[in-house]
Length: 217
Image (cartoon, rainbow, N blue to C red; front, side, top):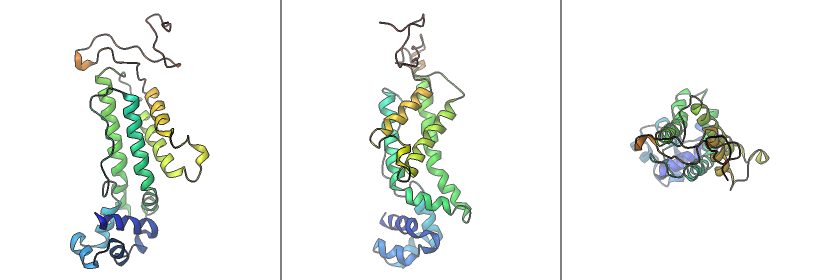
């Protein structure tokens, strides 16, 4: 909606106090009365505008039936990075005003919570299909991936030397995440198929080992 997009733009530039309904209406190309008729108040309009999904287009989703975890997680990370980079000014402004307007915490939490749920469900699917073993460390791995993605999106323009090249970043973060959760070379038999022998775990060098611990030739 063009009104929400205009509100996001004005809020990101001027903050709550500077984001007047007159400015928003001018950017959106509508009458101020229209803003109040739809949203009721400036507070309600801006609260809706800062929600992560207010103007979000469809982005990559994580499948319930993993086939290529490397490609799937890389695609998801790339989509998250693009979305966060597009909204970084708005996110920074919102976080800077949380202490003064604590109800914004619910808006700030929405995006990370959705991402956390998506990754948690994806890891559950990886476990069920035999790609990884259950582990209490999965939550920490999710936290590290989300932290890396958020730090890249928010901080790259200030300290670019701290991050991998833009084009390589999604695959790099995905690769480290999958290594952290112990992704196996391939699922021999997932539990959805009724169990069976577990697939070999990837050693440090990235190649599967046989039952004696040696890398097969």
